[in-house]
Image 1 (cartoon, rainbow, N blue to C red):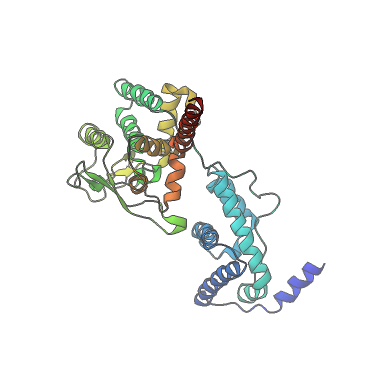
Image 2 (cartoon, rainbow, N blue to C red):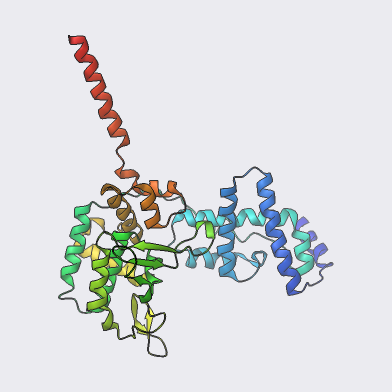
Length: 359
C-alpha cells in the first residue's frame, strides 16, 4: 500500500519535458552516477567497465534506460546476449541493477516529473542471469592438432559441394590461427584492407578492432606473418572471384556472403557463417575438440604459437590489438616456463651444494 501511495503522489506532479531537456538530464544523471561510484571508492577501471556495459545496453535499447521494463530485459538477456559469455551477461546485468538503484535513490521523483514513469529495475528474480564468470584462462589445442584440423579441412576443399563458401570459412579460420584476428574483425575486412606493399610481408588494416571498455573501434595494422600472406594470396587469386563481385568496388568485402545486395553486389559474411564453418570442420577433422574450439580459442592458439616461436610480448600485444600487456600475458600464460626454469635452476644449485659437501 505504501508503494501505491507513492505512485499516486508522484502522478500529481507530472510535467512532461522536451526531448532536449531529457537528453541533457540523461547526460547529467550518468555523470552523477560516475561521481557517486568514485566517491564510494571504486577503481576507475571498474567504473569504466560499468559505464561501458550501460552504453552497450543503451545503444541496443535506443531510449533512456529508465524506460526499460522487465520485458525489455527479457528480450536483451534472453535473445541478444543469449549466447554471450556468462561473464559478460553477469557483468552487464549487475551494472544495470546498480544503475537503477542509483536512479531510485537519487532521481526517482525527477524522472517521474519529467516523464511520468516510476523507476523500477527491469532485472528481477525471474530474469536475473545465473551462473559464474567464465574462466579467462583458455588452453588452446597443440600445434599438431591445429595442423590436423587444417590439413583435413584443406583436403575437403577438393570434394565439397560448395567450394567458395567452404574455402572462405577455411581462410578466415586460418587467419585467426595465424595472426589472431577476432571473428568480428574478419567479417569487417574489405578487399582494400590488404596492403601488400607495407612491410616485409604485407599488412592487414583492421579498422573494426575491439576498443577498450566500450571506447569504440580501435584500428591497427596486422603484419601478414606466420604464413598469413600465402593464405590470403591463395584466397584472393583462386577463390574470391567465385563470389561474383567487382573487386574495384569501394567497400567490397574480403569475405563475401553468398547473398547479394539489391544492386547485385556481394554482402559481407556474418560471424555465424564463420563460426558454423569452423564448428563443422572441427567435428569432421578434430572431433576431440568439438564444441570447444571457437574463433577465440584460435586467437589464443595464435598467441601461444607466436610466443613459442620467440616473439616478444610487446610484439604479440601489437598483433592481437590488446590495450594492456596484462591481457596478452593471459593469452600466453600456458606457454611460459618461468616456474619450471626456476625449479631446474634450484635443483642445479642444490646439486652443487651437495657436491661440495661430498668432497
